[in-house]
Image (cartoon, rainbow, N blue to C red; front, side, top):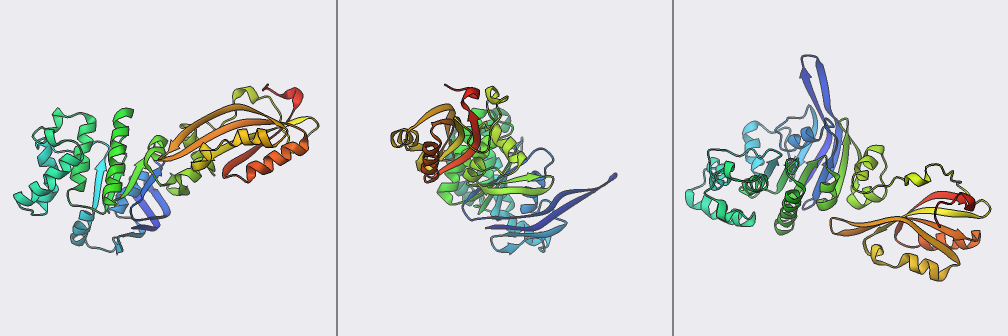
Length: 352
């Protein structure tokens, strides 16, 4: 649905040039929810504004639904933008118009009749849960209600793509959850392709299918949300994930020296990641039943990445070296993420 090829954006200022995007490429499939996460100044807002050409890239290609946008004249772009809805962090509602009037506004600009507008707007207000607010003004609404108006307005022209620029950053956690639930419903109901720009890993975790991490104008990591949580490749990604799931070793282990190979009478420390159906399997119980090892669970949690169960355990395996190796082979045969932290001598053990 969306292809970005070698996208570059350079801003010229009084003090020189600023390269906000430095050759960004990405492919976003039809019907998926794609997240772009980055810190302030990373280039994520510039990226999303290049998708609908609110910012013209300095170089590169933007292809949406098979159409190359960067070569289009402004008049043709106005028609193409009707396929691309957008919602904003600060809502951008017209204070002088009612809820109904705000949602109707893009249809009025498109020259629709009053009957056509009513036919489109009333179902949208039902969809976002604001049918009873249609005659109220933005000043009478909560932040979450304002964003629901913004979503309804973005859907008025029946777009194929919905862009969300920090759409939940101004909202409290409970309202954020309700807005993300609404976006998931819209995605499933209409097969809408959604691109979400955010600096909050909780948003990525709750709603996205795939995610790109952007830093200094470059995409430094991209993949499924599950893959990034289980196998983060860059320090920036690990830092974002740490806000949701702490992969750091507990402080109690800070003074312990781990060996990469077995030493006499040592225990093996592992971090296990359970994904999908494996999160519901009694893996640890099976380990104890099959092998002559002791398993000490030192730390663990379970959560969900969108609808996929995801859990982590920090465990210590104790026993004969041969038994530990058999247990490790058993774990490797399962659909788990396994990180071998190292071996620790029994007299240095913290657990047990």
